[in-house]
Length: 524
Image (cartoon, rainbow, N blue to C red; front, top):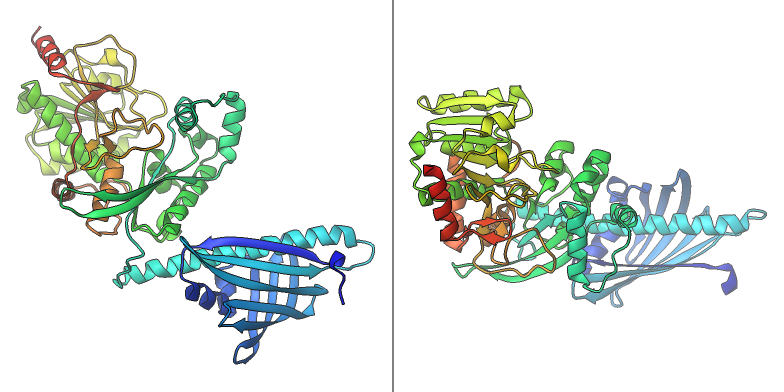
């Protein structure tokens, strides 16, 4: 009989968003483990007799291989799987898997006892083997969860409808550390803010997390959906330091959304840029992902057209400059507006990409003069309309560069131009790419939006797709935004009550008096 003092006890719990039978089925298919559990190198069934199974295991953690043969007994009536090693590297090794109902699925509980009794190195070996075994079973539980969720999405892709897969996941992030501090103060107004260095270091180590559930979101068409808001713990400044670390945080955020069994994910802000730039995110995440750029571009175009109407501009006589014109949103706006203006100037970082979009637009429209430029200041100084579609940590356009009466649609994230300090009242600068949803959402933190009845176009697109039960990557990749797709998402938005947001410059509503002031400036 083993004394209790000789035993090392390991307890692990995890809530897996799946039915009990799915988990038990996955857990008992041990021969498949090496294909999806990183620490399991080999498993095989040696013998099977009704509810008793004998299996061989070979795991490896921290380059240390551990092998054993165990006997498992499945108690179907109790919902318990008991196991005991009958041969192998560890002297004693036995425990139970238990499965309990939970509001979010099934709580899986592992209660394991081991004994390591190797002379001379016993003290070290006990702690080390405990850590290895714990890490293995934590990895096993995580892998089983991902396996079950992945198979569920595979069923959906094969058009086997599942009520469990529905809704949207919105992934966002603070746009700088001042924004992060503001968010933390909203969550706890009494918070004494730690030093910048401490907060920065801690935030960089913090994994992505779910912040908020959105329940019963209702559209004008009386359709309802649900969703969640997930914080990817990145700040744009971090990207230059370690883009792969930022990418891993975005993957973690997507996997959290996947765990909540959403139908589509929206990558907001810089998460979409990193997600497309660094790796094939679709090969890692099973949920369809959209950047939301199609609806964002649509809202930017509609905002420009409405602003031009308010200022009584004749578009056919105007010069339009699109900063970031070779990017996804910028090129989408260009395709729609190229035949409505007299002259179009596209700016970007590389001449090669600008030439590609210029040549495409020239084939679409022969009458409009189309130029390209790498100099933003030169490109905007004579423009009647500017669409700033380049996302940048710091502002790449200055208010003093624009001519009197110019319309400036600030689509990038963060919105550096519309929130910049300026005394100019003779230019129509507004935050573009924003929608007014049919149901206001009270997020617990400041998302950088001017009012509670506004929402980013990228988030709105995912919500519209969820309301339509169209779980697809509507916007993904570079340069795929077409006028046809913009018209399609615009019609769906109208159906569900998503409208163009009111005009804001920073957090201030642009009223009729301001519009009249800008109109007068144009005539001077």
